[in-house]
Length: 431
Image 1 (cartoon, rainbow, N blue to C red):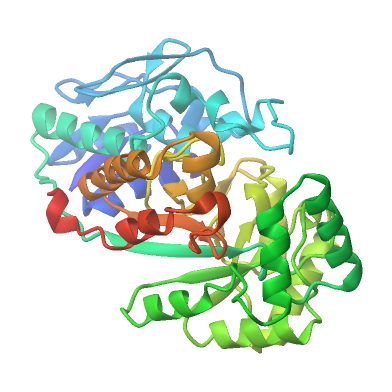
Image 2: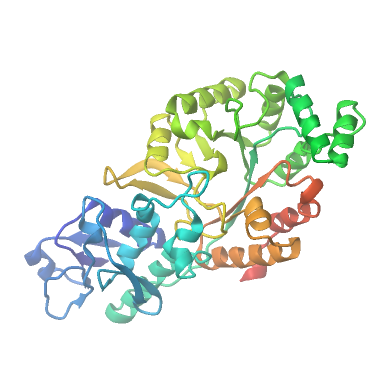
C-alpha cells in the first residue's frame, strides 16, 4: 500500500491517480491528516509543501488543487527519466497528466482552423514533439519507476493486450446513387465545368446499373465483422448543408442500408457539422438513428471532428451519449489526450469526473493522405510507429476510415491496401 499525503484531497487529484495508479494495479490511499500520516506504516509519498522527516517528497504544482482554470507559465523539464511539463517552474508529472487528459489548453486558447477546430499543430504536445507518443502513459510509468527507485514501491510493468478497433464514418453513403434530381444535375454540371470526364462516365454507368457505386464498400465491411473484429460505424444523418451532404435519413435506401449494417456492427451517430451549434439538431439526429435501428444510441463521433470543449461533451451527456470517439486531430496523427486508453471525461467547468467515456483514435485516413501528404507506403510506416507506441504503453489502437476511402476509387487509389495493413497488424510482431 502506498500512502500519499496531500493538504487537500481534490477531484482533480483523485481523477489523476485513478489513471496513474488504479489503471496499473497499484494500491494506495490518500491522507490529509498530518498526525495520522506520521503514524502510518509502509511506503509513503509526501505530495505537498509540508515537511516530514524521512519521507519522499514531491512538491506539487497547484494545478491539481485548483477549482478553476488558471493561467500557468508552461515549459518542460526532466522529472525522473522522462521530460514533462513544468508549471510556473514546478516540475510535476501528475499535473502534466491531468493537464493533458483534461485538454485544459483547449479551454485557454482562441486558436481555431477554418472550420472552428483547435488544430493539432497548435497543441503543446506538438510543440514539444510529443504528439505521436502516449505521454500520459509515459509520465505514469516514469512516476512509478521514480517511486520504485526512491521508496521501494513493488511494481512491475506488464504487457497489455492491445485491442485493434477499426471504425468507419459514413459521411456519404453513395457517390452517385439515390441523390435527388437537383443534386445529380448540379454535380453533373460541376463535372462538366471542371472537365471531370471520369466522374461523368462513372456516374452514367452507376445510374444505368452498369457499375457498382464506388462508395458502396459495405460488403467488404461486413466481411471484416466475420473475423470477430470490434467495429463501430458512425452514420451522418444531419440535414443537408454545406458540410453535411449525406442522402436523407428518410430515403428508403439509406434506412435499409443502416438496418443491414447494424446486423454486423454497432451503429453510432455521426453528429453533423450543423449539430455542433445546435443541441436540438443533435437530439433530432440521435432520434432518427434510434428510430431506424430500433436501439438506444449511446456512441458518437463529431463530423469533421468538431470538438468545442466543454460544450460539445456537455450536450452529448444531456442527450444520454455514454461514449465519444472524437478525441484526435484532423491535421496530425497521434494522441490528442496523450493516451490510447479509454478514460472518463473530466469537465473543467464543473471540476468533476463525468459519465462520458472518451475513446481516443490514433489516426484518420484523411490525415495521412490529405494533411500529411503521405504515400501509401509512407502511411504504413507512420501507422506502424503509432501501433508500436500503443503496444508498449497500452490502450486501444483505434483508427478512422470512411466507406469511400477503402474503395480504391479516384484519388484514393491504392489506399485500401493501407487499411488492410492496419487491420492485419499483430501485436506479437511489435514486442
